[in-house]
Image (cartoon, rainbow, N blue to C red; front, top):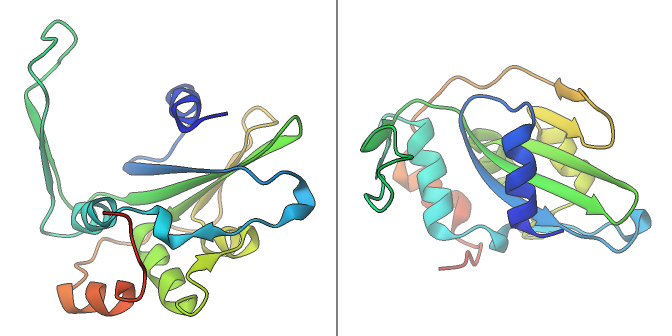
Length: 167
């Protein structure tokens, strides 16, 4: 499985309203306990998740290449739920998907700063939604979606300063 396959699956499944940044983790076995490294998140991705959830917002102009499929020219998202969506894919066994709200993600990064990664159990604990791909309609809300809030630039920098995000 590749991330593009995950994107195709997401198009057909129930998902929460908001923006989603998808990440795929492929441990060899269920017992492998592979952690999700925060460095897998690009600086731009983290910044845009935070901005979309706050007052600053996120603006995107859609390409004019194929006008026949384009419904509009651009969009601006503000105070919109933003999620890091991590799939743990175990070959021929099952797929677990964790939706971590950006505010919970910042808390998780702050708590795990020395490790610079999070285990599957830690992702589960901080998830707003989970989805078990092995069973139909196993999408489940674990807690309320946090209300939007601005993350001041200083707080964002303080929390993420030790993480070597991809450029």
